[in-house]
Amino acid sequence: MNTQAFNGAYLLPLFRAIEQTRSEGAYLQLPAPHPASSLAADDAPLGPYAIAHLVRCSYTAGLAHADALRRLVAAGEIDPTSPWTLLRGALENFATGLWLIDGAGRDERRRRGLSLWDEDMRNRHQHEQDTSHQPSGAGQTGAQRRMEIKDIADRLRLSPLTRPGTHHILLAAAPSAGLTAVKVGAVWRAASGFAHGRYWPNLRASQPRAAIEADDGIHTIALVIDEDQHRPLAQYCHSMLRRLQEHYTARAQAH
Image 1 (cartoon, rainbow, N blue to C red):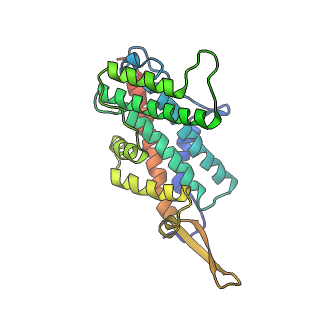
Image 2: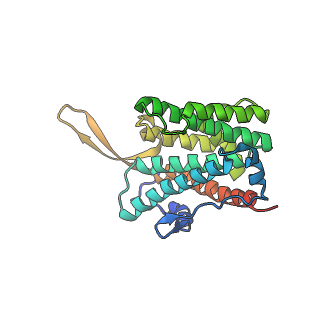
Image 3: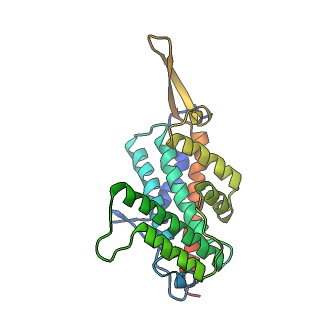
């Protein structure tokens, strides 16, 4: 277990990669697919529900999560929780992009893309219900969009759309990035535990620094991030980011 003050040198390769995506206060987007690319061919019958759009949005969200940690480190504001939760978000985003473009076969990639779009519109429908919102003019509701997505899937004779689970996506994407699925899943579980305020990650992935006894005899434990436990998460994020950039570029170019 690391007993030194926070150093964070293992984060530098990821941070350098993130800095290369910044330009004039914004993140450089992945390019739109060339019309003669294999990715454009995947998207051709999907209408507005393009796989490329989901990949590009997920990629940018991952950059923002990782960049937020970079800024915290630069400011010297390191707590035992945020480094886990921010890179958890980045890992999920980069893994989702890989999962979408690396499916085995065009039908499977289309099924994955439409499944994620279906989940997106299911969440939209829930929000519309929560807020009693109705789209104005000729706009469609989330429920109507879901019917449209299902019609596309039926027309293409795809396997049934399934709600994509984050853990499943991570396990499926890990080999595409040259990573061991169970190891990626394990570090993601710890990060998710921190994100949800669970007790057990503090025992498994934090480092105690001090114990403060209260008047009632109960001790409060001061915890700091354990870099040895956090390092694999940063490495997995970096690997998935690089592989996503490489695979997207290859599939978005003309063939």
